[in-house]
Amino acid sequence: MIAFFLLLAAASPLALRLETEPLGRGRVGTVVAVAVQVAPEDRAGLGGRVRFSLQLLRGGQRADAGEGVVELAGDGSFLLYREWPPGEGTLQLEVSSLDGSRRGRVVQRITVPVLQTPFLAPEQGPADAAALMPLPPEEEAVRFLAPRSGAAVGTLFLTVKVPSATAEVRFFQDGELILTKNRAPWELALTVGAVPRRSVVRAEAWGAGGRFLGEDALVLHGSPNQLEVQLLLREPQGRGGPVQVTVATSPPGLEEEVVLRLDERAVARWLACPCVVQLKPQELAQARVMVAEARGGGRSGEAVLVVGSGTIAESARVDVVELPVAVLDERGKPVTDLSPADFRVLDDGQEVRIDSVSLGQDLALSLGLAVDVSGSMSKDFPLVRRAASGFLSTFLRPQDRFFLATFSWEFSLLVPWTADARLAASRLEHLNPEGGTSLHDAVIKGLELFRGRQGPRGLVIITDGEDTTSRTGWDVALRYARTARTPVFPVGIRLSLLDFLLRGKLTELAGATSGEAFFVSDPGDLPEVYRRIGEQLRSQYLVVYRAPGTASADHFRPVVVKVLREGVSARTIPGYFPVP
Image 1 (cartoon, rainbow, N blue to C red):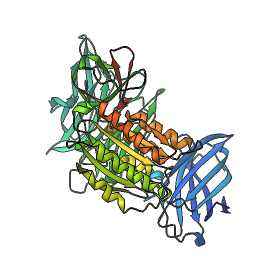
Image 2 (image 1 turned 30 degrees about the horizontal axis):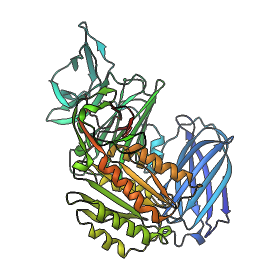
Image 3 (image 1 turned 90 degrees about the vertical axis):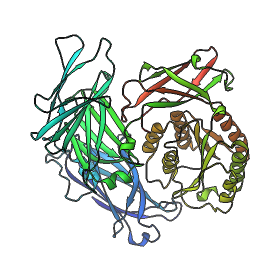
Image 4 (image 1 turned 90 degrees about the horizontal axis):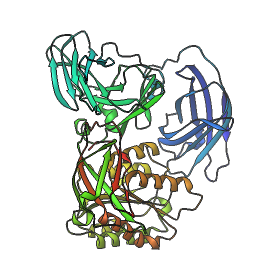
């Protein structure tokens, strides 16, 4: 199925060649290769990368959708692999330059056949092709069997299958070593108590000479409505060696499909566990978030791990939680006279003991400001620059720290963490807005800068348009924001009512991080917006406690905060992934 299309776009239309080729039977449909080529006369000026978006429609319903940034081959082509249900449909594909100035669109009817031959990924093929071909369960791997109850009340026996070369098994509960065995049976008797609580048990198998063979994890007393998913990463044993990634699911044996992704890119897929894969350290360094998704037995679950910053060990776990909480009265005004006795916190369904409650105005503040400097900001930038500089100079106190960043095609840190607000005006003074809008990347990069910082904090993002040039998608940026526990205050400038998708994204981002989204039709209103943001940050409570049970780095923990005073409401993050 080959066709050339030349479309009359608003400016610089691209001529595109599209070819689809069914390749084989996948897990639930047919794997199809989608080949796209930009016509020779249109390649000049595109650079080495383009943005694509596609969707497959069936009877007016969307059967598949995807978007991203891809590298062009020397002949101006790129190749995608998708898995689609058999039948007829309409494929819509759009390709654009990273700055959005040139684009082309293809709409084509296609028929996806039923194929009986299983799909086999080509050798040295792209990751999305390999990920559509399920990996077999690892035979020589560590795997927990289903727990069985002992004769004594409150006792569980946990048995683990291990590789034949195993000389020692180490059992851990909630991160603490509790038993080492050097002979079979590889079994642990565990007392769970009269009131069972969620707990994570991990087993490591070691061979002779201290050689690591593998590991697995089992969640006890987890949610009855979902698959519990754990991500286990093992540092390379030699310089430059691969990182072993194990995806553990609980209860064992329920999984029907497990997919491992780096950002939006699928890198492995299994239909049964043990689920083990070796990844290159460079792959992890280039990604922001690792996600494991599992489904089976009518349940589903996911695990998220931040991998793009620091070492693997730094991303493992954290027990102390600093929770940002805004408390408002019935008129929407901040309430600032509460004590620790006025708060109740439920973390993952369990009430916790609060260690301390502090008001933002009593603590040193960390503030980040990321400003959109894409070409569309040219007209409003003088007002944006003055408002940002004025806000920082009047809001910050000597003990506070801030950073200043900009984003267009790329995220750029103009002023690293400092207390000198005068630097902001001088750095912004000579900027000329140009280029695309990498909003998603700015969210991730901006929040990365808060890693390791304690106390009240907030990230303010100024933008006037939809993302056009990010390397990462919105879902990845939102997942990352949920790990940061840093309130985000997006400010949209001159967004029309038709920009409802962007308005929705900014509002969703604020809600997921305990911030607030603002929309102004006139940049002259920015000083008032900054005043309101500053008021919220100063009146924000920082509630500190230790996470109950285990703070597994890949288990999303829902949070509920209640204030024991009538007529007030508390706003905080809906939950978090407990990474640093």
